[in-house]
Each structure stands twice: as structure tokens, then as C-alpha cells.
Length: 273
Figure 1 (cartoon, helix red, strand yellow):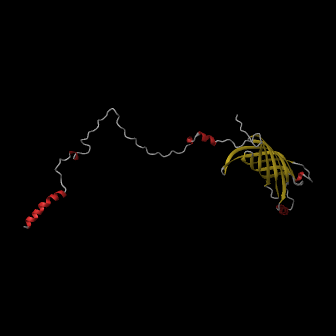
Figure 2: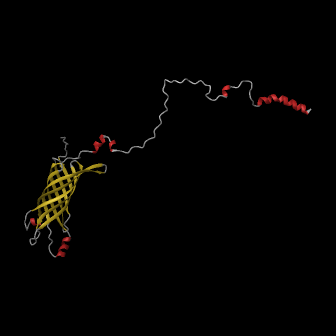
Figure 3: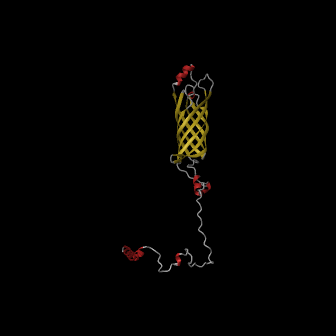
């Protein structure tokens, strides 16, 4: 009896189980396109032989390293700016220079004073100048020590003043950086002749002025086209006989000069030939 009941229950439940379990649906035919490889059986467009074949896109070239800087790459305008005119012209202008001077080579009678030079520039690099200098002698403590050591009077010529006619030549011109500005400068040499007055030129000897020559040089910086700052050295040579009982010798005075130069007229013009 139990066997018959179980069999009837399986027969009644079989339709429901068939609906829940997956299976192959044989009610409609299989789709032939499902088994066909992709692209097979599709209609291909006709090939147009009148058009050139498509070219592949160009390959991107690797970036080249930057070439080093060359002078040829500089624009012509930049090259012209590097060669500039002089910041000033001196030809045809007067120069008035007050100077402070200090003697460097006399350990017994130190001399310091002032000078005034007036020059006229015949060329931009050459000028004729008249220079007058006044010295104030200062007796140092070395005079007393020297007299005790040598037991006699020191044979030192005491120079009081001089007037010289010099030629000034400026062979070198240049520019230098000073902070954020450019300062022009030139180097100069000077040489000339004139007269000097020493202790023997006045009473009691009254020998008058002595013939002298000088030689020197220096540098001038031009913060303005009409103004220069001057630094220089000047050597003056003249014969003198400090003591009558001793033969005369050539006296040598080496002096340092510091001062300013003013150029007149203040302005100038470039003249194109």
C-alpha cells in the first residue's frame, strides 16, 4: 500500500519539477548563426581599386635634445647692442681738476697740499694741461731722531710748490660694472716740464725756481659724462743743493693725487662723418 502511494506522489510532482529544472528547449530550431564564427557570413563591402590604399598614421619621432647655444643664433639686433658708443667724448672740451696731493717718499718732512689742473683736449685721447701745486711741509719726529743719529743737518730739500706743463695721453678706455650700473673709465699717462720752488728758492739763498720734469699716470672713472673721479701718482724730479758745502743732487718727489675732473661744456654731440 505504501509503495502505491509513493508512486502516485512522484507522478503528480513530475510536471512541477520539469518546469523548475533547466534543460534544452527542443520546441524551436537551433539558430545557425550561434555556431558561426564572428564575421563569417556577413556581407563584405566591395573593394574600391580607384582609391589609393590607406596609409598608416605617421609614427611620432622621439624628442631630440636641445642644441647648445651658439653665437650664430643671436639676433643681429642683440649683436649691435653689445658694441656701444663711448659714454663720453673729450675732444674740444676743457677739463678743470681740483686735486688733493700727498707726498709718499719723505720720512722726515711730510708734504701735503692741493693742486689745480686745467687741460684742453685736442683729441679724445690727448690733452695739454697746466698744473699748479702748493705743498705744506710737516716736520715729523723722525727729524730729531735723524739729527741725533747722524750728528748733522739732514740734507733734505723742502718743496713748497710747482707749476708744470704736461701732455696727457689716454691710451686705454673701458667699462666696469658698479652695482647695477656701468661706469666708464680710462687710463692716462702724463709727462712734462716746469719749475718748482723749494727752501733754497727763498731767503736766505734766494736761488729762485728750479727747473723740473715730471712723469706720472692714473685712472679716471666717469659716473657722468661731465664728471670724473681721478686717482694717480706723479713723480717730480729737480736739481737742488740743500747745503752749499755739499754738491747738489737730483731731488725726487713721489706724490699721490686724488680729486675730481669737470668737463666743459657739460654736453657733447657725436658727429657722423
